Image 1 (cartoon, one colour):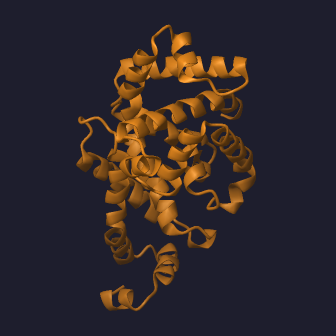
Image 2 (image 1 turned 90 degrees about the vertical axis):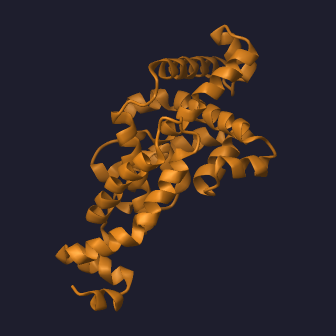
Image 3 (image 1 turned 180 degrees about the horizontal axis):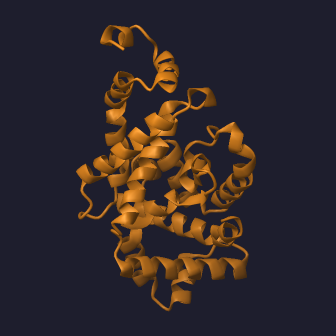
Length: 262
C-alpha cells in the first residue's frame, strides 16, 4: 500500500486493513506512529529503578511489546489500541527485567519477609497493620524498618505487574491493569477476570488512605512519584515508600487468593 493511500485512511480503517492483509507498510506506519509510546512507558517504569537499569534498555525491551501489540491487536474487540499497547509494552519490559534477574537476592528475600510478616499480622489483627507493628514482628526498630522500605522501594513497581490470571495469553490481568484500566477489559474474558478484579479492587480499598491515593494517582491519573508528592505534600522518597508499602500489603492480601486461582 502506497504512502498516499496510508495518508487518506483513518487509523481505524488502517487497523481493519492490517488485520485483514498484514501489509508490511501499514505495520511500519504503526511502529513509527507509536514509537513515542514506548519511550513514555519506559520513562514511567524507569522512575525509582536502580542506576544499573538503563533507560535505553527499557526502551529496547518495550519495543518487543509494541511489535507484539501491533501483530495481536484485534480492532473488533472494542479496546483502544493505545490502552492495549501500554499493557503489552509494560509487560514486555517487566518480562525482560525478570529474565535478567536485576533484583538483588538479598532485596528479594527481605521483600518476602516483610510480605509474610504483613500477611500473618493482618490475618491475626483483622485490620491494617501499622509500621510499628510490622517492625515489631520483624524484630527491628521503626527506623530500621523505614530504612529497609527505602532500600526495596526501587523494586516495588515490579510487584503490581505480576500476572494474576494466566490462562490464554490474552486473558492476563495484573493489579496495575485493574487500577489503570478499570473498564477496558475484553468482554470475552470478563467472567473469568471479574472475580479476580473484584478481589483486587477490594484489597486496594482496604489500604490506608495515603497508600491507596499513591496507587490511584500513579496508575490511574498517570502522575509521576514527584507529582504525587506535590499533591500529597510529602517528599518523593516518602511517596516511593508509600508505594512500596501499598504493593507489599496488596501482595500479602492476595497471596492466598492467588494460590487458589493459579
